[in-house]
Image (cartoon, rainbow, N blue to C red; front, side, top):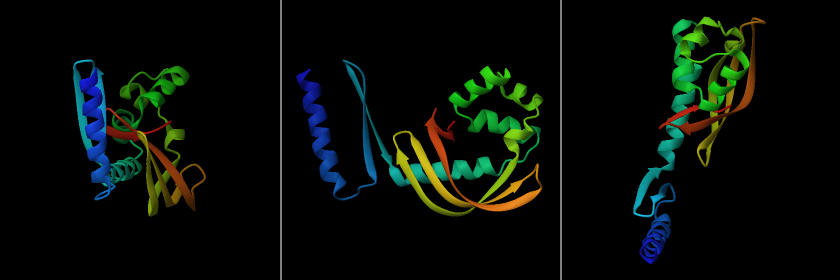
Amino acid sequence: MMKYLLIIFLIFILSCSNSKNNSNNRVEIILQDKDSMEIKKYDENVLKELALDSLKEFLSLPYDASGVWTAYEKFYSSAYKEILDKSRNIKNADDYVLSEPSLDFEFETTIDKVYSVELEGKKAHIEVDSSVYDRVEDSYSKARQTFVMEYEDDKWVISR
């Protein structure tokens, strides 16, 4: 036990001294059980860019069977999939395509300007100016929006 505390203390000291040089480098210590420990390094700027790229890719999906299937499989969080299962009995991407989810794809959004990407734990809050086309009303508008992405299963997904 003392050995683990000493290791954690040394890592803390090293990370504090390195943080003066580059505040974007982070270290995550994962204690899996009493005999193993995993240390992951990650770059905050890279995570922010990946979250933004994932959001842009999601927003560029067309409203067709392929786009709907991809949205479900690649971009929906497990929490949102659970909501779809409980509220609409959708258990997988094929069910989602067959449900013809036009209301989920009512708006076509394009990012015009990114104001900020803030990380908070496993979530990214992305504040943007956007152009929005409402397919139902056949109208365009501008909006300032904050999208919330969540890091799940080694990828950024839409948080719901």
